[in-house]
Length: 571
Image (cartoon, rainbow, N blue to C red; front, side, top):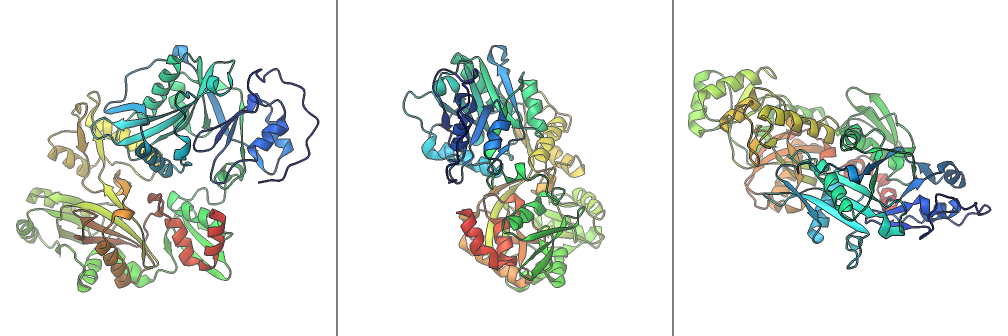
């Protein structure tokens, strides 16, 4: 904690300071909400902010004269680049709830665990469970969750603070904080449903307003709030200069234009004092240098990966042959030579996969083909990616991506194909377009659902057309491949993977002799030993595996001399 600073002469009482409770800070689970209007002396507000605990994120809201506060601690505090908004609750239009989703208050620790899972995915501070259970009759905090009506899966969460309960607010207001929606959710309107539900909750309590703070560049959220009737509020927010807030006060870094897969690595490198140099922006290529060691990287592909290892991963047929030669289990495979051979392969297995021998991000891959016509069309599509096309035995199961770094399994996740949820109003095409926009917003533009022949084929096989209105409550699979770049979602299962699969993945990485690899497998159940290796990716996206420490292990591998310092910094 920072040592006490000399205090200026007491400021004259402010007309804005209420006559009720003074110097109010409310613990919200992720940090304290500090009500700036309850502080008469700016030095008291500064001292309160500097009492922020490690790992928390305190927010001083309603600061009327931020220049005065910042002048007292310019090296420790900063003006948050956010806008404040206010909704007059008397004007609230509750609107219809989102289809297939219900909003309720939290019920137990399992809800907090799911909220924290979403916070991790959104790179937000997690909630301390001990702070989420107010005493009986305490109306200060409200935690809402949105859950899928059919499964009970938690899709989003929001925190509400009652200002009257906090400090007898003369404005009779409340506020919304920590709105977070699972980036994997197929349901539209989850965030809007949470905002409307919290506003209705506070209106029922007799509150006049609901306020919130939103980053100035979060155009998607601002558009939602303006749609709901929120208007700008002339007040300011101040925060402490900590590692979590660093990106808000240091300004754009030279790596700002790199894609998310590169930035997660350059951010971790900078935190350890490793020099970062952008080599080529369009390809997200950068150089890391420290202590006499230097590596050129393109995302997770580094100069430590040999050309031989890259060749193996690039050629899917070669990958399969080498893994099979090491007694690792792989599906049967053949190169497409002519229609007759393709038909014979299909007859042998009943269902096949068509894929280009080279390619990435799921381009040109068609899954679970069962007719000669489907195979012929898929081969023609795959040839647009690579002249050599492979037929592969279709294996039932879930798509498992395993990240191996320095010959240790660091993360594992089930990848699920894109799907949409019907609302009884929009066509399948419209639902796909809307879901694609949400996936792009949630992944920095990395994930979108293409409206191509493969999508149309999947929709047709499900008995629908792109122009059908999908009934409310019906879920439709619109892709068979689970790649993130074609709209797939990714779900962490690192702690559940069977030890036999872990051992097989380490062996596969050693067969290829590659320091960083993403292995794709099909598994009936991640908790069981059965598995089939499908592909190996020499440049896996490490940003997709929160909460697993993929970036940390990547930098550990390249710069082991920084490990001890990194652990001290984190703790």
